[in-house]
Every structure is written in structure tokens, then in C-alpha cells.
Image (cartoon, helix red, strand yellow):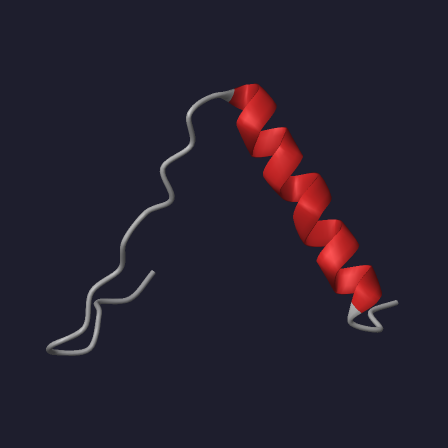
Length: 38
């Protein structure tokens, strides 16, 4: 773990629940495949 660079910040994702999180993971995997991922 390291400190952030000065002037930068990190925002966390706002998951509503497990179902929504799993749907986002599936959508991310599909986008990866469509982009030519392997």
C-alpha cells in the first residue's frame, strides 16, 4: 500500500448489493471479451 500522490484522490464504487455487483462483473467480462481480450 502506498500514499496517493499529492492532489490526487480515489473514489470507491457504490455497490447496491451482491446481485448488482455480480451483474457488473459479468458485464465487465463481456466488455473485455468484445475488446479482444483472451
